[in-house]
Length: 251
Length: 195
Image 1: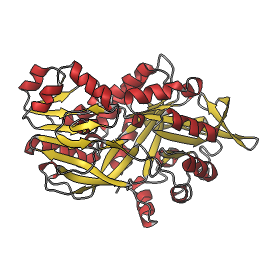
Image 2: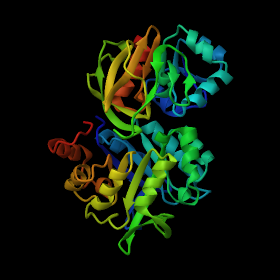
Image 3: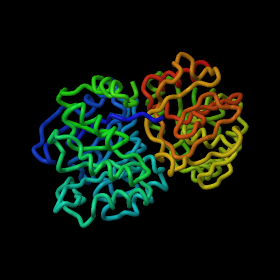
């Protein structure tokens, strides 16, 4: 049986890792490559890098970062932020990334998922979905949480699965940075609906939050950022706790 | 000298990084002459099987790979292409290992099979020298090679499938040793030093 994954997420701005609350108030958390190496050594199963200042000019910086990270670690990693063409994806995969996370671009151009999966394989295509509760419904937001769309979150998860995504990275903007735990209702529904792996994101504040996401929502992986960056929770300790609670993790 | 085959299907950079960790001498190539000059071949691959087979034909490498007697390590799609057929694009492959790849049933399990899973050694292999049984390796695939007489290790994802196969000079692993931490580096080291 495949084990449950623990994924530190590195929001990157100009090669530095930053972390905010509810997508704002950024704090510096160190060099991206150094942090990646630390997580690799501590037993992280995978890493996610999100370039939060992704613009055309910054594209070259992102490729340089991917190249440096690929040299430094021997675990898989995903890269996202402003990726909108097959050429962007090709360059980043060739630089050593294993998967590409697509967010705003697939809302505008859903076919990109199918094209990317056809060329690079579904396993390389992560659909990143940011949702926020608006009038008791999960609304999909794009552009780093700045722009509301007409899409409903759970339906959008079903749709990206049909289009050929290999994985869903589902972030609750309501919970992001709050440390109040993952949105278990949202995750439970999506995991039941789709046949591809789901990564929980937004709200991790304690070991128990990870356990709840694995047991209650049956997610495949849990992502967290600030909790790991500021040494509040060690990956080895978290894995020990999960193992003691009968969750299968790589040790 | 190792020839790391670049046929436009894969994460060559990651394998190259792992070879650099080991100070191995290698060349990234799709040139038949350069491959002929190498002692060993690494045949990686990420992507779609029928596209990859087309690329091998276009580069005139298809028959060469079938006939080579150099130690060859197929990784992920590289291993799948060593089978007779692939269900992905229903394409004829290299025919070193018997049968056809199959797709995981997404009504029974998550597809792709993505993440770290344990590899259970079935037969002694130089490839797994010094690697404990049931070590974790990283997998990312939707198609798999069913167990066959050449399987040397297996993994379970709703069904048991070949985690590795071995026939004469041909070695194949379904997981990504270049992304599997220290166990993976050890496996690549074994291929370089012992196979």
